[in-house]
Length: 111
Length: 122
Image 1 (spheres, helix red, strand yellow):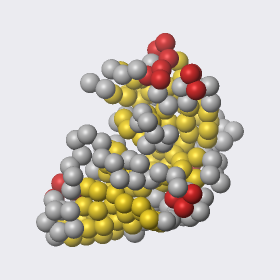
Image 2 (cartoon, chains in turn blue, yellow; image 1 turned 180 degrees about the vertical axis):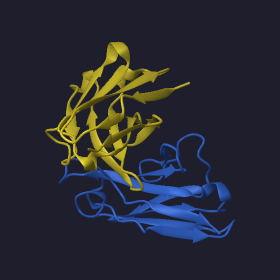
Image 3 (cartoon, helix red, strand yellow; image 1 turned 135 degrees about the vertical axis):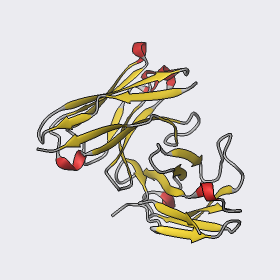
Image 4 (cartoon, chains in turn purple, red; image 1 turned 60 degrees about the vertical axis):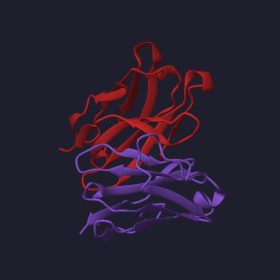
């Protein structure tokens, strides 16, 4: 049972928009700790996709965007492409655990 | 090219020990906060622990499942991070990644190694 809750899977057709939610509590997201998102392609190391809730590192396409409201955050992928098929993880800090925590991960399938 | 390269993984029996290493290249390692993150087979990511830079006190923090069994250290003269794992359990099996904290943040993991596999089994 992960501290941050994500849907196990989402899917969409090429070109569509999909969103992945990440819900926490008052000891992590609700306590205003930043949320970061990672993309993990099959067999590869994770890659930082969004940091500080809504910032993209250099090289990340603007099709990826992050937002935060209260104890929830979400990652949106617009103009879905076949290469976006991967696992996506949210991550934050939890004050009651005194450490970083990840969501359980969401598998994105491009139909 | 900026990169991290882990090594030291392998097969170990329950109760045994293993030391992982992570060598950094092409960036100022001594200023970086560095973490270990692991992934059990077919499962999600799990933060293991972190060590701050020497300038920030070189303090360490650990996840509850490994606290008291794992120790993170660093040798900045060798651009190397270590993870000493003692009293290993079968649930410690997985791929272990080292990763640096993005400058300007406290816990966004920026650069990742390719991972090294640890298998705890009798």
